[in-house]
Image 1 (cartoon, rainbow, N blue to C red):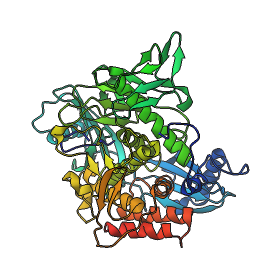
Image 2: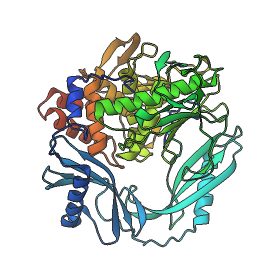
Image 3: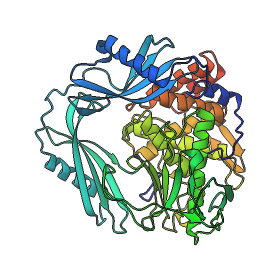
Image 4: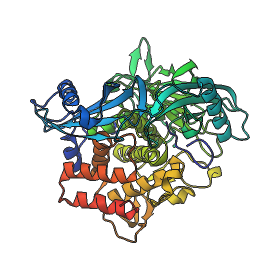
Length: 550
C-alpha cells in the first residue's frame, strides 16, 4: 500500500444529473454499466474464460501444479470480455502470476496479457532452506533500518511463503509483513521479500497506502451529505453509496500483522447528529473533518461510477468506511484493503493539517481501485505507476467535483500543507521536480527511486496529455510544464486522459507493468477508445516521448 508523503515521512461528482462529455460518453460505452441487452454477463465471461484456460493452457503457461482465481471482469459494450486472474503454484501465491484473458463477444479467445512470461516453477522447489522465524527477524531488522533513530515498539512480523516471479527467474521467497508503533503510537510498516534459500533481501516496500443533510467542512465549504436516520438521530452513513460511513478513531491506532491479522484496530464510532447539519468548519469540532472525509468518499464514488461505470471501489456496489482523528499528530492518510477502509490523521499542525482534503481522499481510495484491478506491485517502476494512478484519479475527482471552495488543479494536497512545510503542495503534476525529489523525466535510474518520486514520470505524462506543455493558468493556479525532449505537446483534455488511463489500468496493465509497458497499455486503450489513426492516439505517444518513455 502507499501513502502520500511529503519530505517528512508520511506521504465524487456529488450531485445527481451528471453530464458526460463526448469523451466521457465514449468511455462509458466501454464499461459494464453501458450497453446492449444481449451483451454477455460477467458470469458468462468467467465461463468463457474458464474454457479458454483449458484450450490454451500451454500458451498461457498453465500446468497441473497451478491454480487460478478470478480477480476482476470487464465486459465492453460490444461484448468483448476481459477476465483477470491471479495464480498459485503448488498452493503458494505467485507474485507476477497475474494475467488477463481477452475474449470476443461470442467467447472466442483473442489473446492474453501476462505479468511475466515463462515457467513459474522455482528451480530449488518449494521447501525453504531459511526458517520462517529467521525471515521474520530479517524483515524486522529491515523495518528498523528504514526508521533509524526512531524507538519502535510492539513490533510484529508475519512471513508467508510465495513464489516470486517478478524479480528474474522464479524463486521461493518469504514475503514478510512487519508492523510496529513509533514513539507517538502511530503505525509504521514494511513488506520485505526475502530469498527463502539464501536469506538475501529481494525487495522491500512500505506497507500503508499513502500521499459529505449538509456539512461544514474544513476545506470544501458547505457540502451536501446523504445520511441515515436511526431513531431520533442521524448517522453519517450513506445507503445510496453502498452504505459507506465515517467514524471517529478517537486518537487511537491499529496493531496489525501488516493489515492481515489485527490484534486490535482503532475504532470507527459512527458520527451522529441531531439536526442533520454537520460540523462547524473549524478543526475544534471533530465532526468537521468527518464532513470532509464523507464528502471525499462521495465524490470519489460518484466520479468512478458516473464517468467510468464502476460501482464502488471493488466494482461490487459495496461501500468502504472512513476513520478520522487517527493516531497522534499523524502526518498521513491511507487506504487499507484488509478493512476496506480509509484512515485519516490530523497532521502535526506544523507541516500538515488534517489530511482529509478532496484530492487526498480521491488519491487514497484510488489505491483500492488499483488493488482490485492491475494490482501494480508497490516497488520499482510499477510502484511509481501505482502512485501516479492515485495522483491522476485524485486530481480528476477534484476537477469532477467542481467545488468552488476547492477548485480543480494539478497540485496534490495544497489544502493540507501548513507554513512550516515550506511549499504550497505535496506534489506538482505539471513539473513534479518542484517538490524537490520527484523526477520529471524517465531514465534508467527511475526504477531505483522511492515510488513517491518515480511517480513523477507518470504524473508529468498525465498532465501533458490532458493540458499540454507550456505555461497556463487553471482555475486561478499557475501551471507550467516543460517537456524533457524540447517538444511541444497539445493536450486532449482531462476527460480523455481519464478514459484512457482507466481502460489501460483495468484491461491492459498487470502487476509488473513498468513505464514502457504503461506506454503500450495506454496506446492500446487509446486505440480501443478513439482509433489508431486518431489525434488522441497520437497525443498519447507524443506525451510519453515528452517524458523520455519511448
